[in-house]
Image (cartoon, rainbow, N blue to C red; front, top):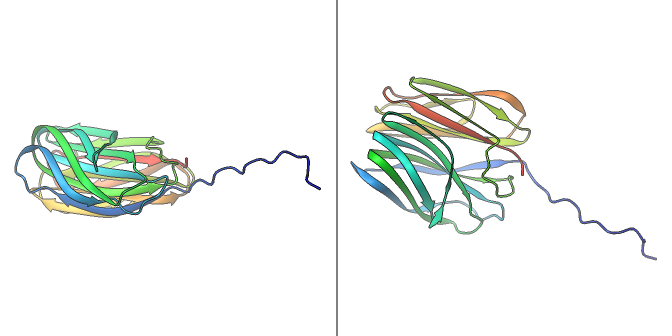
Length: 217
């Protein structure tokens, strides 16, 4: 005999948020309004994959205006500008494909781009931030983020001079040093923390950083 009870579909399995570092780079063009990085890896395909690109743009009034990956426009999740530095984290749901051209368009005189690429799963394909933060005008930059249970976070920052970059509060993933310096970090499946301190040290001049946390979708 079959039960008369109505069968209910079980809830979708979600979380935790997993953020994976894929790669980084910097431009060698002295000045441009558009920077293209060909065949950039975007990791393993997944039905709920989000691609995240973190950017530090250096130059006189440099401001990132738009970003595409594999021809798909990315949403700017957090952006903070400080004189000759611009820090940006952007993202897009992109379940298919393993590589694509990364195109970063800028306003102002931009003479160097530093970037890191991550992929993220566990948010159900959402790029909506749980919390964001920013800091400027110091070689020791610090901010606080609300981290939800099983959530994840990403940060990026830089300065106009060449030198090392450190990250604390999150795991440092990348560093690029040229005429200026940029770097960033991330963490996955984190414990809840309503006020996590995320800090970066960067070389002097036009220092800026941003960070974003994400919740399980």
